[in-house]
Length: 244
Image (tube, rainbow, N blue to C red):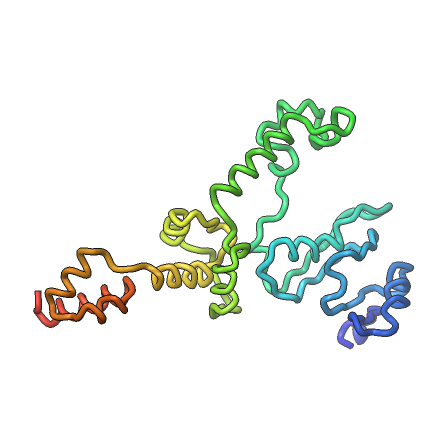
């Protein structure tokens, strides 16, 4: 209604819209300037002339985000670029394609004369492209995306999120996540905090902590029921009371 009010030819469709096929055909034919949709045009729909994508759907999946943005990244005659309007600032959380992804680590060795690596050698992979693929595969094995691990995905889905401002994770968080073999670059501060707190809750107290607790009068059952944060809190309380 707002777009129509300002003179745009706008339409809306979704999976249960009986007129969706006709509306999509009209949009492709230029009858509409913009078409809104709900969980419909994220993948499997191709209209190369689309030159603007407005993202209003939140997601923690980089793959889905790329699919949505990709609706406007097809090449078409007379098309110069694609405008991405991301009201949720999700682009800050996902690393999309960069020149390094296209040209490889060593552009001077690609032999492509300024062309992308896969455009040379009769359509075969070049050395630069193969090296980049190997490097990405190696990096993927070293550090995993926590959003692709069921355990951490559940933590992220239940974690409180600051929708107004959620900065990237801190250097301290990155160091701890790196030790857990997790890719910190895909997480915000609050997401990293949720994972680290969950990991801390699973951590068990050391033998030294258990011994100290037993010396302070805690029973074996009490100690067995403590995780690391609980044991640390109990010891801190006893220390504050001057017990040791």
